[in-house]
Length: 262
Length: 333
Image 1 (cartoon, rainbow over the protein chains, first blue to last red):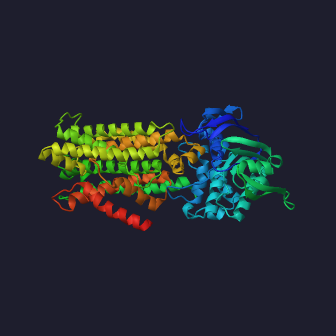
Image 2 (image 1 turned 180 degrees about the vertical axis):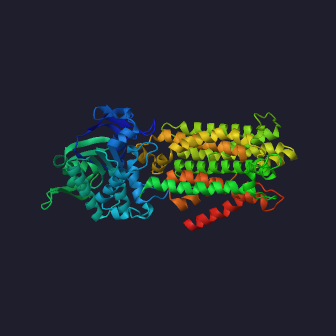
Image 3 (image 1 turned 45 degrees about the vertical axis):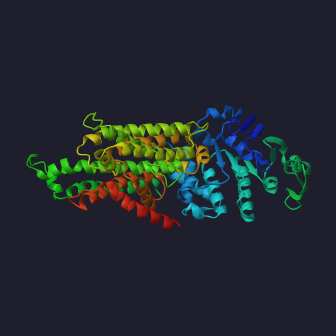
């Protein structure tokens, strides 16, 4: 339902290609992980897929329409984004942040009605943050903030969710909670997702497909169990790793062993 | 939580307070007058001294205070949200410096071409503001992608100092009378003398407020950052353009009417946020209303504290604004 066709991108006209000839395809219901070292172009690829940046070459298609033909409002009703960090310039309560997710569904002078409030409350409940609704956002912990931001994206009621390192600031407990939340949203609510992450084990435990990126290019992509090999981990991170199937969970797990020179 | 009810209630309360202040302020002064008598239509106009003082002598000044205060406060709110910087003011982006330079050139060169009862100084001031807006906008939009808020800020700050230097230069070459008039203008003064300057500034202010009316929820989302706002369905560049141009135009009109009256555009939004939170659907109208009342009250102080001497209102707002700002900084840290 969302695909990038041979997209390239540079931030400055004379700058380097941050994304270089990448083609990816998110089928309806997919749960795709995007892995790669720092600076590999994961965040930029997500920006191209969400249309907040236009590719320098190639195109992004949402269904059968080019993304840049649609208004931001139309795109936002179908694609929601969870950014890496959210810094507020002004003080808002958690529920106010979540209600901002309803923005693309409201007219210029329309005020959030009972339905919008219900959707926002459900999003808070789904992320286990109902009790934080009236707390000032800036007083929350990193993990609580991240879950509020995910709730805001859920409140957007989009069929597609793009997440940029959603668990980066979370402790182990919340990492587990957020990853099971994402899995639930995907399996029970049919939300299609792409998740960029540095957490190989998170990716291995919930993503059915992986895209490995390095230096702006796709190194490998496909079903998790065929892509996540010791050879690929070495090519991706210059790290020698053990990859095996965890006996209890049945997920693949990656244990880094040592750094190798390229 | 009924959001619409909350917006309507808070804004109505602010509106009642503002209307009360605007009606009360003209009754205060060297001669006390009665509001009831001023509005008593059974007394002929020629014999109704209270009505004459109210409508001719004092109301224009109060209305210009209300218009300037509402405009600077609302423009402050819009620019702070757009720049994601609570310390921005309507004067940060160089509009007022352009307006000041225009006014001062009109004074120095003795331009006396008035239009429709409006003297040359406000017209030149407004023209100066438009030049400043044009320069800053051109610089900021020459970036490849969108309006860069950093460039806006840098261009504004630089333009402010450059125009200030030009002002000092022209002033150095001016004679004593011209210098005095310039300094007096820079202090801010709401004694407009008649309704004509208010009516001349009104169309620009009304146009700007019409744009402000469609912005508030977009401003909320914009404060989360450009990328997040875009992902929430905001056409970021369009919203930034509307916010910058409308707020700057309104500021230029306000400055041409009352001079660069400082601190209103920053104290009022802060105070209002302390009371009503950060939702711009409430903050924007509430700040406009409170800005009007605040400015009228400051001007009331300016013309009564040392009566019969009338102080420029800019001195009062700065005397209140400076310490208030320091208090705000101490409280935040």
